[in-house]
Length: 264
Image 1 (cartoon, helix red, strand yellow):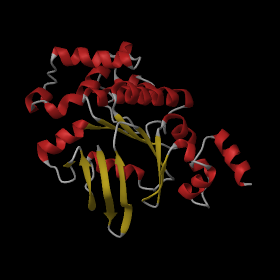
Image 2 (cartoon, one colour):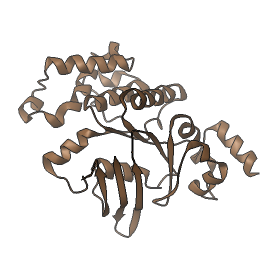
Image 3 (cartoon, one colour):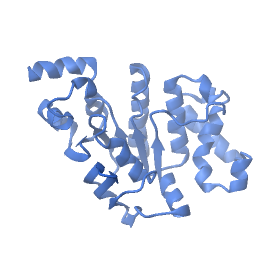
Image 4 (spheres, helix red, strand yellow):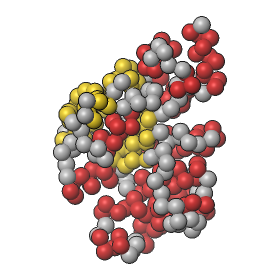
């Protein structure tokens, strides 16, 4: 069980995340939505411990992970894998080596320096790539792949950690619609088939409605909605994105037309 308790992040006088609380009692696919600057990315970075909280607590299975450091912090980051919008791959390194980097937190410094990977890890990395439909690209440089393929390599690297939670920060924001669908399909399958919790910051309402069991809406660093996709009405969307928001921040072109008709 994941518990987020009044989690807060301040940058000087600016409160990026303001006393956010929610509980994930069982594995779920959760979408976090909101306009730019709502605090979505900062929230995920705090959960992963890439950023320290100013106040509040993060608990997983009863353990407070908010103040972990050193090897305990690295172990938590292995259990709570992070996928980024810009992939964060090593461009000139081959695909399978990028995936194997998901094991770095549990390997010795010497093995890391000389890229010494056990044979079983190499086989597992290729099996994960095969599961994601890109095993044939294993020997290629990451920079030779399309954006969608690179994001699936990033997902494979996360799975190499065998995490209990997968955090995805705008994983499809830079992808075309076809690749975006493939990546979201992969994340949904990871939740359903592996029983992992997936928490994804998402740019569009229709993606949240289609893929998520639960949607959390943020505005000005606060949670203003926490419910099912069916409860995500146009009125709720106005609360999340603000009455003055352009729905280009909230929707695909088809959804813009629908929302504008309903608000007209």
